Length: 75
Image (cartoon, rainbow, N blue to C red; front, top):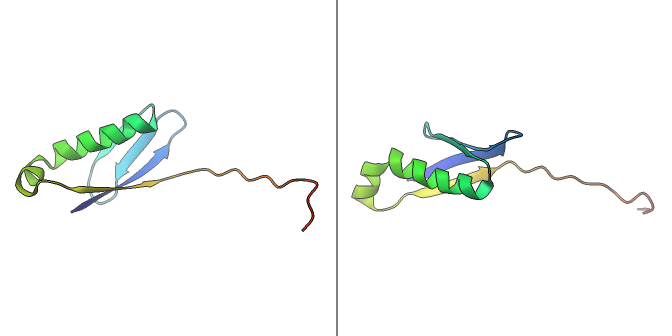
């Protein structure tokens, strides 16, 4: 089973929202958020993990990319 999360920064915290399951967590850093996601999945799917051993986690992140062209370049 694949557990999917959307991650984004709300201006103060990194947030993770389950796409195909009702799970939400947040943290001050992205590294801590990844740890929180694993803990939340382990708690939410405790019985499934005991029976099957593992679950896969897929994380989709929102990223802002700033692009500025050089004012002196010609194309």
